[in-house]
Image (cartoon, rainbow, N blue to C red; front, side):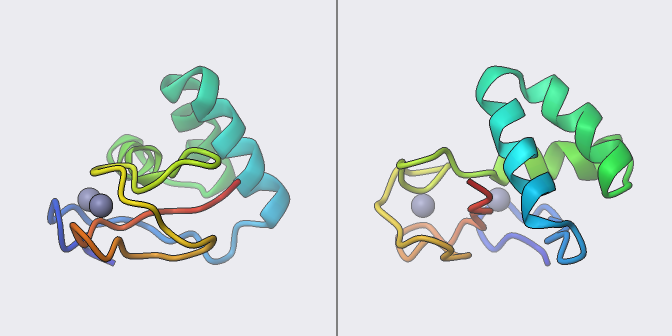
Length: 89
Ligand SMILES: [Zn+2]
Ligand SMILES: [Zn+2]
């Protein structure tokens, strides 16, 4: 889907397993580049797609990746800024 906040197309990766999603979220916590490399193989997708996914991954126990607004677990769109948030933790 296209993120209503930044207008970037974001792959929701519905076919990606929970285990792989958690792995990508964990990798992002230490290195965004490592998370991108992992997603490029796991999804699979290109550089641009992987970058957009990593950008929209929400950190564990934190709010919206963009504005920090608190969000319920698994929520896709931030009620405050309308950013797509991928809750893969
Ligand atoms: Zn966005
Ligand atoms: Zn937000």
